[in-house]
Image (cartoon, rainbow, N blue to C red; front, side):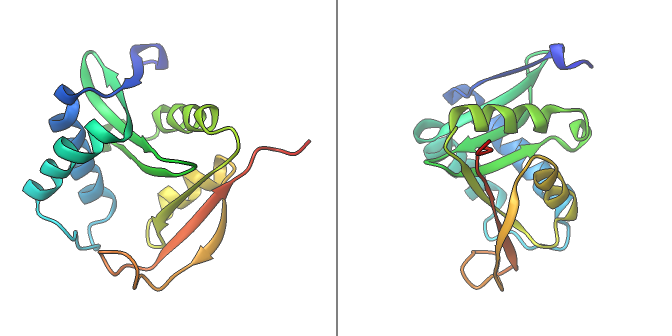
Length: 154
């Protein structure tokens, strides 16, 4: 696989099941000790009924198969998940570059404190940790960290 083989595009309603499946596989692989607040069926319904139709959702496809997903809000990179078999191949970097292009005034995001690989990834991509919490405000009740990226002022 080369980066030329991967396409980033806006998700359509038909992508919702595959987007949810990528989210589920990625979450379970990256965060085995973090309980999910919702069942698989609830997560699939959320992506089908809310995320894909109502949010700026992007997918990475390889040979027509969804291998990654990203959701952008107003200045918020709210979700970025890759199929576990596709990590470390530059797809996440392409998603972050797209997010910065689409939100040139800056971005913020949350990730769990225990997710060391995600934290290193975001820090490598210019995000700075600005807040740590005890998790009382997220559904999983897992300590998290807020990251911020601002465009270089120079």
